[in-house]
Length: 268
Image (cartoon, rainbow, N blue to C red; front, side, top):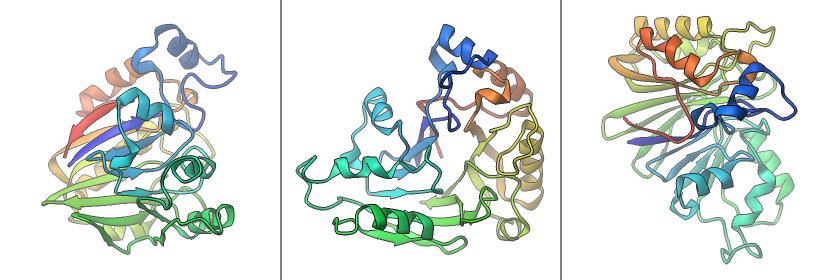
């Protein structure tokens, strides 16, 4: 498998709207990898994870084609991951497609909100539930519960193909025990993990600080959730975490972790 991190920013992006934080100002000045769009990914250019407000820009920037998608997976319904108003532009009268050319997979909240917005539109919706696996072509997808929202079954994903395993874990706090109980011996070859709070602690439980992330990775190693030689890369960075991309690289290097950036492509 090949995963492309189309966006690696938090909800505000970097630089953020109306932000004069140090991280935003550096991103405005230096550009490049310091600039982050809202978090999203695509596997083998076909299995799309999340559909946020920056999707069209990301496709143009990376010279991708949404017509290659075989499915769209949603992690949860926050606006930076779930921009339902943009879905219409893939269908008639905005395009020549008479029906959505791929299925949309999402939790009960996602399915309900898409149906509410497009009650008569030809969109195939598949409701997903944590710890219940399903197949999409050659991929086996298992949602696991992300401790990100109290009112919704937010997902991280275990994705397998041809004996290789990816864990995509954005927008998650420290997992609850039901998720930890599910993970032993998963042996992921690649872990994409968020670090939304960076080095600034927060009262909100739904994202990880650097120290939280290190602790989660250590526990995953202990229970065999990631392979000994697994690649680990970060995503979902906020300007409020007070770490530039360059500083993140320096911070993570001693731990053998890759600082994710927009457009990064990794083989699983």
